[in-house]
Image (cartoon, rainbow, N blue to C red; front, side, top):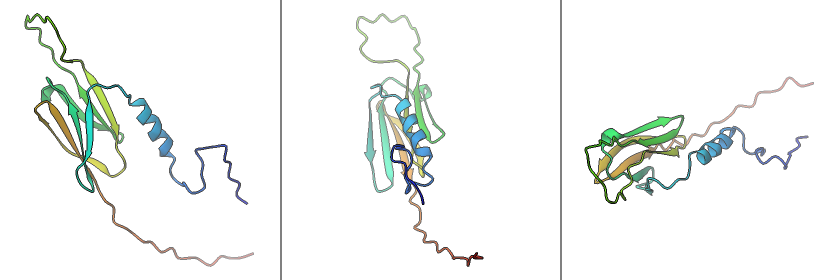
Amino acid sequence: MCVYDQTDPGVHPYLLGFDQLERLVERTAKSGNEGYPPYNIEQRGDSAYRITLAVAGFADADLSITVEDRQLVIRGKLHDGDDGRVFLHRGIATRQFQRSFVLADGVDVAGATLEHGLLHVDLTRAIPDSVVQTIKIQPGGGA
């Protein structure tokens, strides 16, 4: 007889092989929820998405995009050249940032573009073929 312990929320008899789910939730929580830079996530079709970040003042050389262990990491570091300017008011944010997004299995980065102060990162999701597998039942050597 199989005993299901309902006091352990991470164990369910129908969720076999989902051990990475807890790690995924932890990684998402650690990625931070700061508000800079602001971003949008839009669906552009059945299997296409776009993340858009407002990165005014950053050039493409100031930005880096990497995928690290199924986590999309976008970093920005503005190379502030001190050219003798004196600011009476500085309201445009030029601080460095790191923004992370956890990618689901099968989601890949298709490309990125920078236009008019907006960084667009396009994502695609491969739709797996539906596979039906028949398992042959072997006769047991009974006792």
